Length: 363
Image (cartoon, rainbow, N blue to C red; front, side):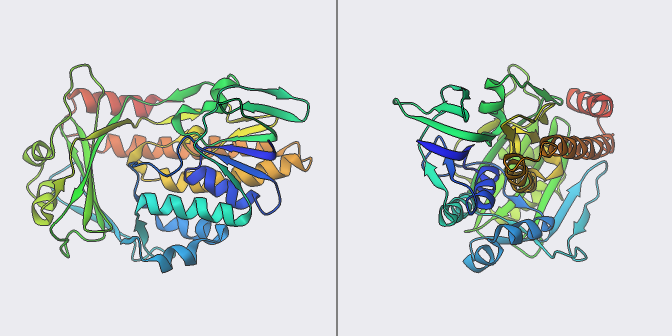
């Protein structure tokens, strides 16, 4: 098989890149699974609206009726009072609490409509230089040759790691999360994410389409640490915070929790001749920033434009892309440092001591 550009990973970043590139290049979009898998990450901020418009999916997304308005955030952080920051004055309007699987299917379908070829399920084996770029082994004796490769494979960064890139990382952080049903959403809970600092970490909950809700707990991955049940989070938190939201909505988890790495991560060298990384493969912000999906769309779009420019002979395109990501990473780092430093109620607690100091000192 041959393609001009191979994209490893059909999540939001990889699919966004394929949407941009497929009209002008022969694109192969490769993923380990034939359909999107359950993932944490449901909040898409208002600033994503221009990106969705540029990708040509905004009207389709809004017409689908599959997603909820994201009106802002309520938080209990650094004290016992609820603070609210809404998007009423945001020039882009509200954001979205997404049906994540439906959102990913829409992006992948749009990439196919633009002309991308999807190869899934397929798993990257080897990648090595070829006369016209790269040769990728995809298992079962299948190989693909491409002039340029985009790594959209998430934290694993399968292409970048095989080419020798190594990620840097922020303080240890694990997210344990539950999806579940609710009896109802109230005027106090609908449209808003609720974030709360707790002695052992921090938690948030957000409404999902279909009378569902997500609850996530961020904590240290210490040996022997048992993930707290939603009921425990409610007991140790403020009576006006997540405890109240869970009680008012009647949240019932579907089953066992899922756990995933959540620490900030980045590639110091997110690109090289004939390849670049996008999305979480290039840069994972601390989840406190609520920028994961926005970052995926932004880097998917700009990474695609960079790849096309490089193939057209612009030798500075990769340097410009690397500089842009370095600037974004520093912005995220400063934001995380300010937010963690603002929570001073438990300065001796292992989680807060580690994160406040580490974020302030991290290069």
